[in-house]
Length: 158
Image (cartoon, rainbow, N blue to C red):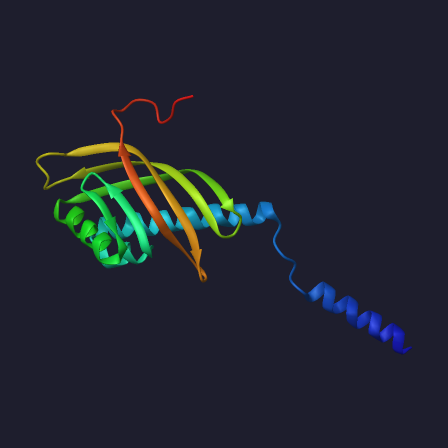
């Protein structure tokens, strides 16, 4: 009798315990996290919320842009403020997510279109972007980001 109770209890515990996600489920979760992070960044940039945009980056992140290289939160926030002052409006898409260490780090690429209402040198631009995103605690943070303008040609070459 005691053995049956112990077996039944063990069975209940096994069924109640959450199973670890499969690698494919983790990859899908990372893709969703990359899309959510990209949407948050895009929304913050379009609102002119440079503090929120900068908070999406790791503390030692690197940002490469036409303005140069920015590292760390203060420089990245200053870049976001500068873009807002030029009247930035941006849209982004996530095209590819490549987990480099499942559940820990990923390489994400996509496309962008932007316009500036207060920048005489550049009114519109389009191109591709690349982000290296890492897990920091329970959050995903941008470790490196670069936007590259294209001349309107193909997104990628074979």
